[in-house]
Image 1 (cartoon, rainbow, N blue to C red):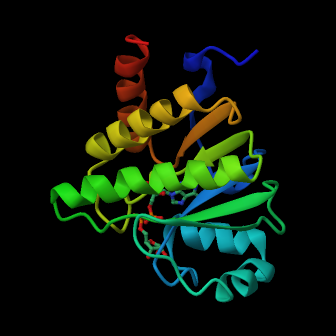
Image 2: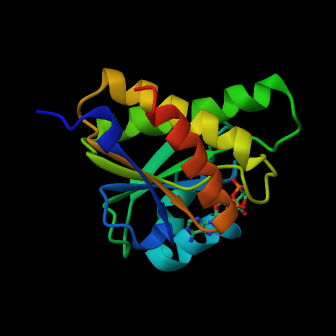
Length: 177
Ligand code: AR6
């Protein structure tokens, strides 16, 4: 039987590249050819095979997701998604929601049971973490309600500010489920 909904989401501090999960999500750009932030960290830890496979994907539009193998990472897969550059428009929120949904759909199609997300768009792309984490948590929770294949979602936060924002939001949401 599936875990209760509230036990299927965990918020942790750390480096996503070390996560022992079936899939980690990369906050990439539309080229999928690497960059700074979490994207750089994932490519460094995975090794050159990841960039090689990414070259064959031909990029990815904002709000969509693509899957590759994990190479030298503990995770079997990397799901690359492209978050919006934040400009405060309603379509930024829609694009961010779409990143989480597409990543989860792709994960489910590959039999992923555990998945870890970074704070997509909350670094270079400038999305305010207090707004982004609400979208992340709500979208993931909605997905878990209708899909029992993914048993566990981790939100892996690098900085204290992001961690505190996610924890506060999760406390609020979890009290109502
Ligand atoms: N583990 C977990 N989180 C991390 C790690 C890590 N190892 N490193 C950074 N973060 P960003 P974006 C956090 O800028 O805003 C890249 O160059 C970081 O503290 O990585 O979606 C891409 O190629 C922040 O909270 O991604 C794109 O061009 C969060 O990850 C662009 O940046 C996301 O920050 C994408 O920008």
